Image (cartoon, rainbow, N blue to C red; front, side):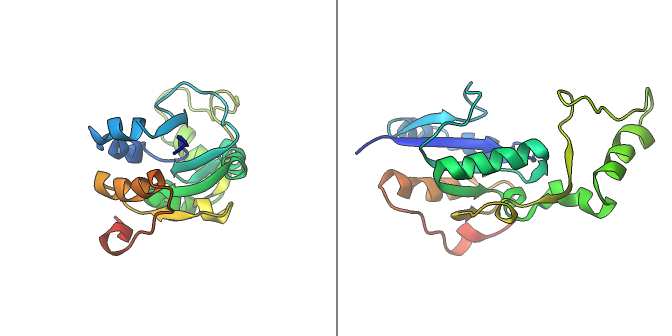
Length: 180
């Protein structure tokens, strides 16, 4: 069987889903025998490649870089898995939505609550422009599988990835579709 071109992507979130992925412990060695990790915060690749077989996408869409990235990921990937509650619902990342559009959020964060030098860091290399409303992945692109949890536990991640290694699409049921 051909090796799977596998990726993970980190959008607006806390990286807890990636930490849970690392909780797969010794099974990661098994995974390494079947996949080529072609993009991930865990490896040093700067551009999302073409022809990715499967990707876990953690986090919500919170800034303009995320919008561009998720569209690229969708265009170049066969199976896109929304990885964790932020990717599925917006979850913690979307807590800023009740504050309104991006400008009041930035003012509250960088001016109102600043002790020293209150100013909004508009320089794009410092802070990518925020979108006015944090959204889950499916609001922008089609999602093939939802992997809930904050973060998803390692055994749930295993249940989603293991079928891919056998050449089948995962089908999660029961406690594997529980949020929180």
